[in-house]
Image (cartoon, rainbow, N blue to C red):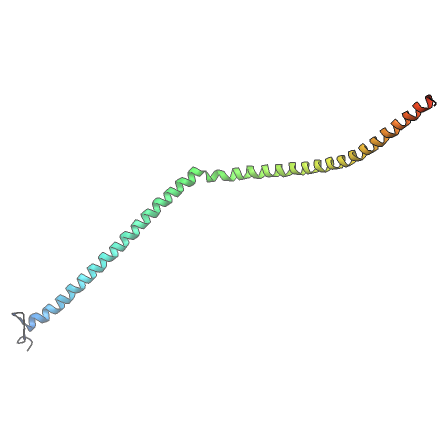
Amino acid sequence: MVDDAEVKVGGFTFRGVYLAAALPLFGSLSGGIYYGYDVVNRFWGVEESVLEVLEATSRIQALEQTVDQSDVAGLDSKLSQISTQMVSILEQQKTLLDLRSKVERAELITNGIDDQIKRLKEDIDSTWDAIDALQKPL
């Protein structure tokens, strides 16, 4: 039955038994080719990922060098120094504000004294004028 069946394709004659054996072989071969193509595509994808990781690794190393060169660890002590200096500046500012208020009060007092001295000088001049007038009667 299957042994007697023949197929003629393009001048070739194929017997049924050979076709029955060849079909699974061709199916397996085509599956192997597809699997091989899929494996190669996956390999290329992994290769691209590895290149990206290598690029990222080199960028990370460059960042680490920059951080080391920037002395980020030394920033803590520098920030502490700045904090101490800021406290000192704030204390000096408070002292300066106190001095400013004292100077303003002193100016107010001095301004009043100038007016009083001016009046006293006028009174003294007036008194001397009166004494001079008494010594020289008309």
